[in-house]
Length: 319
Length: 273
Image (cartoon, rainbow over all chains, first blue to last red; front, side):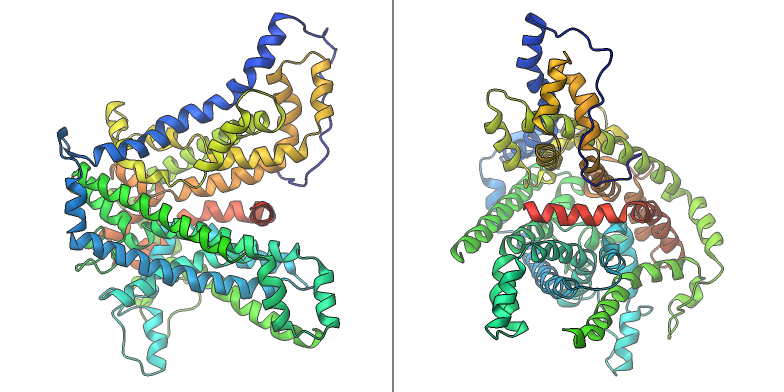
């Protein structure tokens, strides 16, 4: 990567010289007609084989008894029937949704505050922006390792700080709420600044005149924020909600690292923080029950689609 | 407004302190010894043990940390080059060339951009078994060689950055379409390509679920290797932190060199979304 300058620049044409005679006839015709397809082919071929096909085939596998030995009997929707009666599955659904809420709501609210603070004439703006997005360049497992230590029962800083206020040490891994909080903190920490920049960009494209007019009319800053800023950056908000929802439904690395030791993939000894992705992984790659694991994967996919559609509808109704 | 400025600065600085602190703590613990990590008040300045911890890390054989770093570096570079190249190629075609079915195919790309393809990893694993690619790096690399998001991004960029006259002129000069792409389009796409490349590099470096499924502990990626450390040596904080630090350094270097572009890229993407 030898590129350093990202400013859009007018492309100076490096003219091929000396100028060859214009090509005519058959070859040029073939080139014009087929080159576009050739150019888009790599994407479509690789994406079809390694992206779309596996996703669709997951549905087919989920209709079978399927293990290491290969495809077994076709059993229709039996895997799904088992799944709906499987407390571990529902446990994972609840955990995933719980962490999704704990990780998305504070993250986006904080991002909004941060963005409106950054959206002023400030000195050192570049430094401030860099500081805000610093977390996204931390390698993801490293985030898990650092926060696992910070939230450790005995050695962790959070319990140390709580101790200053006479709060007894919390065993963060021990039950649902505490472990969800710790894991959601990792996600919040990592993505708040990223979302803040997205909001900031949207805020900067709101016409100044709107605020000037509102000021003339005597609207307070808070009122201006509610009645001008929020509606105007709505598309950016919808975008971040959908993106964080999709990512949150697939949460995997942070809880897995937080788990430590032998119970990592089950999200604690009582599955208190096992997410859907972890459950799918456990079924497919620890117990080698491909059929059942595929049913879980397909359910995650359906849930994501459902949530995305709900987000979209809510966003549209509000317009 | 003027009067509230100090408060704004103070709040922002507090925010930045919070966002930087875990990284700083990562560094502090990596330079310390295990017996002081859990102290209260915690040790807040770096110690002199970084070298020891890192060499302990490299000699922890079952973590295969160096191999993990090398694997991830190789995968990240390969995937980045491929994604940038294929996305530019397809993005150029969608933005500037006329062909039958163009709009329909572009819709397909838009529609697949948000699809969580990771949910297909079980059949993907079966494909790798068929190809005998389990525990080999091509299993991690090949599926990531293209990106719907990348094609979309480069299409948007090409639309704005490349004047039609430029392509017409090159055509009149008798250039083949690929020649036009290579000599005229690709240089003009460089800024957009840089942003896509940065995000692709960071994304590949951080990939975890799929490598964990298809690789074994003796041939890991860097994130896989870190997770091995955290399951086996979870009481040895300085060892884990040394690993986490070393695994973050390449991303930090990218950030130091290209921070402005990263920020520009995030904000750019938001405007179009």
